[in-house]
Image 1 (spheres, chains in turn cyan, brown):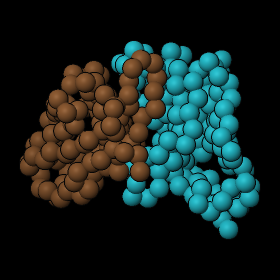
Image 2 (cartoon, rainbow over the protein chains, first blue to last red; image 1 turned 120 degrees about the vertical axis):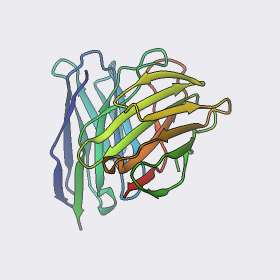
Image 3 (cartoon, rainbow over the protein chains, first blue to last red; image 1 turned 180 degrees about the horizontal axis):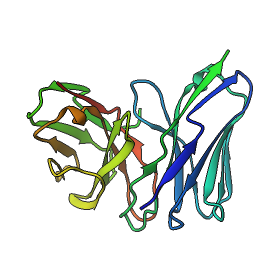
Image 4 (tube, rainbow over the protein chains, first blue to last red; image 1 turned 90 degrees about the vertical axis):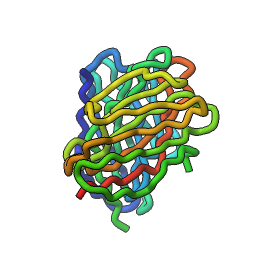
Length: 115
Length: 114
C-alpha cells in the first residue's frame, strides 16, 4: 500500500526565515497531495493542496511543489511568523469516483518559529 | 471552524467497556472518514462511508465498527476497549462527487482508556 515519509520531524526557524518540509510517497497512482496544520488540541486544518496535474501552487506565504517523477512534494513557508508554529502533516490519496479517497499521512513535522 | 462537529470532546472509560463517538459532517458533504491519531502510529485511516454505505476500510480493528445514518451523521463504535485504544479520533467529511477532494476535519474526540 501507499507509504508517505516526511522530513524533518522537527524544524526550528527564526521569525522571518523560510521553512521547507519534504515528503515522499511510494504509490505512483496517488494523485492528490494536501498539507494540514494541526495546533495543540485541535483537528488538522487544510492549508494548501495540489493535484497531480499541477507542478506548483502558491497561496500568499505558502507554496507546494510536486515532482511526480521523483514522487516527492514539498511545503514552503516564507516570512515565517510565530503563529505558524504547529505540527504540519503531508498526505497522499488516489481517490477516484468517490472511493479510495482516504488520506495516507506522513508522521508530521513540528515547526517552531522563534520571535 | 471546519463545519464538522464531533461529540463528545473527551471520553474517559475503563478497559472492556464500549463507547460511541458521533460525527456530523459539513452541510452537503456525503462522505465521512474516520481517523485515529496516536503518538506511535500517527494519523491512520479507519473507515469511510459514502451516503450511508461503507466505501473503504483501513486499519480498523474488528472490535470497532461504524455506520452512517440517513441524515448523514456517523457513529464510530469501539468495544472491548484496551489501554492501547487511547487516542484522538477524528472524523472528516468531503462532498465526494468524484475525484480527489478536500477533506475537512472535526475537532476530534480524545479517548482515554484506564
